[in-house]
Length: 282
Image (cartoon, rainbow, N blue to C red):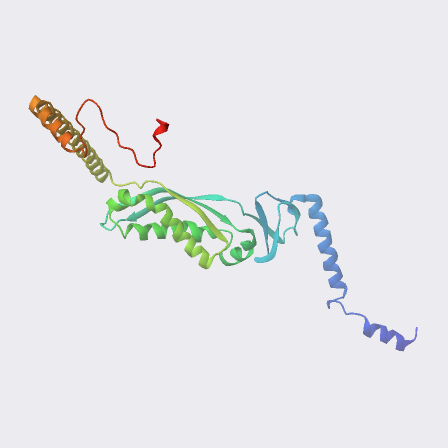
């Protein structure tokens, strides 16, 4: 070979370590080897299953990939790509043991609050990107604690425990949905179920006694009204009975006669007919 041609070939050959050189080929081959070995030795690290009602979310090197897969068997790079199933059907989160203080300073505890919610499929990527897989910690668990404390601090124990307790469910739902709509629009709050709060034993006994007294007062009042009505009817009957005298009956007879506009005397009644009436029809 001509020395000049040998120098030309040497000059155009990619040096070792540069892109397109031998090192890149080695890395590609090594990656293929690792993938094949993982498929043979650890097939579950390459093939995974996304359950029905979920979608698949993926991270590579800690960065969320803009890839959301549907239920079924899916592929991912073993040891490089991490996978997490994300539920997109209805789910119920239970928030337990929520302490709060009422306006009067009484400490009560809501033992359980259930929040039925759903993450919309088309908002999975944005929600995970902003709040992570545990997005419900921010917008449900922590938010419920905040809203319950805000609610309790605005009302007395009587109001929270009895007067407006039936409104708490709807108020919590509206409060949660308002912030989710503003900051995390993919989260839908379907319903909220709040259990009766646990109050101090001494306070609870007082409420029970008050309820018993209130019930007793209501029954006594109804009995008094019934007795009064019975007495009124009885007195009216007695008064009517005393009225049934010959003089009273004669007076009623005279009053009835006086109300008539026409009176007829004799053994026959003379009937008057309008001129248009055909007497032959009789």
